[in-house]
Image 1: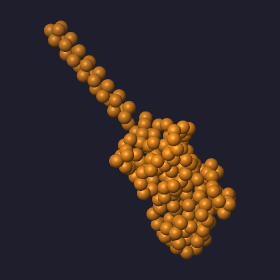
Image 2 (image 1 turned 90 degrees about the vertical axis):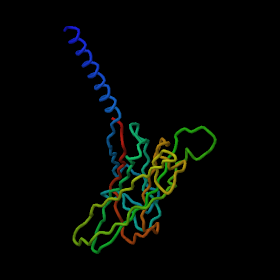
Image 3 (image 1 turned 60 degrees about the vertical axis):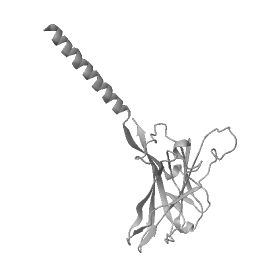
Length: 216
């Protein structure tokens, strides 16, 4: 009887141990989404037509300059999952909306390897070569109201051929997010890019956010 009880106990203990190991393994593979927000004061810009104002950065409709964000690839990013994309969101204000209008920002994206000492390949260049237009969004008139908050989000695409997330039309040395130490994002007015935005007024960028899957 004692032998049977002991055997039963040991079997239960082994089963419990295996269950805990399995639970620990599953937990180790769990990911969550993390959002990193950058206020306008932390963003750079490439044109004298873009100016700093009380709420952020005023970007005219016809200016060709970019408001730019450069950040290291997050150390806890879990990018090898084709179902959890990187997302970039721009937050901005429309100073006034006396008539219905629209917006369609253009994203310029890129990436680079830091301290690359091999033969020149473009892996270490700071550029914003990949272009992706946001959706064309219309909004109604709101006479008497100022600084109406809006947003535009871009979602990275997954390349099964190269196992990487990317923005733009194709995977290049600068657009492969998984392989680059530094990510570059630039935001330009759609009116200036001729992408269908017809709004001729200035917009005020207040911040940008990068969302990514992270290991926990």
